[in-house]
Length: 74
Image (cartoon, rainbow, N blue to C red):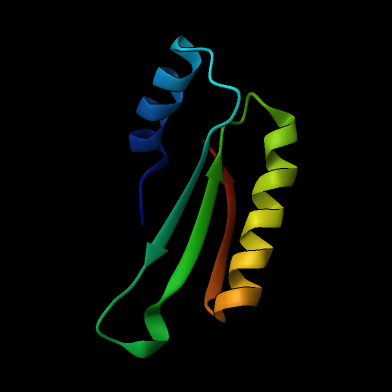
């Protein structure tokens, strides 16, 4: 799994450049068919992003059939 500390670097870059949105989607996989899952991350400073991240996560799970690990703030 991607460490939120690693992603916080990208959040800082987005903030520096006044980005409107930060969403990071991660597909975690393994040689085992049972180990593929998806995570969605968003910038904790933007509450509205949480709703969008939850929607994206739900649609990814629905459309792909992958296991959803959830939505996390960075």
